[in-house]
Length: 604
Image: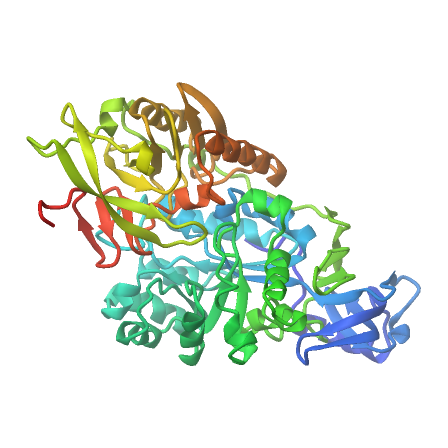
């Protein structure tokens, strides 16, 4: 698969770039009288021009009049800031519930011109084939979408079952693909710490290819385990949640990726490593990780992260470095993108204010791609095969009894382990609660905000259902919400207060081929159809966001008041982030990386 509109390499473009800069040849496009935001020197230089040829910057200086010919397009910046296109250093396209083409279409008007994506969601469902489909559609886009080869499917071997597994041989093959930039986040950090041969083989294949290894150390332990993980080769980490985490990572030679997604608010607590502790900001990077389609449509993308960092006290030019040149440098692309400088890809934002970053215009590879918040370029789609739209295999019609939790024989009350949701953070809490027994069945307790959770196997049609309890959503009445977006194994998560509703919600997703559905009092309140791998839609972001908005309102109608509660819902099976999760194999104690019983022993 090749780029639909490939940009010439520097070597191919160099003779013309030199000619334009010298005034011997005319530029394709010149932007006059702007404020050049130079992220190499951290300066904003008024009264400067930039000239573009063959999709790259040829001249950046005080007067580009010598680059203008009869057919040169001229844009009068009239004092607007000329900012490098924004780069998202770590993100999952599938979290937007959109295909790469639709995701690109959604973020281009916000000034994002480069993304480093880890499609490990689709890898869990479709394996290497799914990664290749994402990679191929990424190469068709008018902006730069680089793919990281997923490293961990399953994310924690022995604790979950995926639709497909990723092997070191898969990683080695992917490293030969044109759009692969490195290895996706190494989530199996216990495996790396233990010197697991499979994990180390994947890291070695990546490093042998001269590419970047992504990190994922989701533990507060900064002792020997953290140091062992750093020695294992990951070059970055986005799982930090506090200042100490950020400082520890950069001191070990890793880049600290600070994320602001739809539900992860980790920038404010880490950016003080720069603003108060004075650490070198060139080792810090901004990213989103997971952005809901509604966030993209209503709030923005990387522009949202940059302005948030500024609001947290970061100098605007430092914040822009962390979303441009720092990212490019990290992935070995400093000479290719991430700045407005000769030879680089001509990715530019025009804005009137560096603090609030209104996006007046966007150029990618020297071509206008958005004006005043409206996209002005096509984002081509692949023809997604029919079989990737039929990936929900329940094996049977589910009934309320499948969601019944049998009490230990003779018990009147039980003490159960409960997954505790933490608002705006990925980790959960391992809670414990005494629950009532009626007719031999254990139920939740609405008064204490404890309801049921179930993991329904959907890859192989086994009919398997694992049941447990969760707290923190605030649900009331007879309701259920089901989703085939269930990081990272992407079975089906069902949360509810009523077993009949839970069965109805699960069966509904089996009918439509995946997505999210909310039920209350016997009726469906909202449905978001995600037919591609049960994870994505190829409908426009605005349409998906509208469906998702109805889902959010439906969750609120059921009593939920959490910020971006759906993102929390989708992570309840993520068995690599502490403390307690659910998988198709049972309840998982992530602090110990082992399966655990739903009921605590008497006296325990």
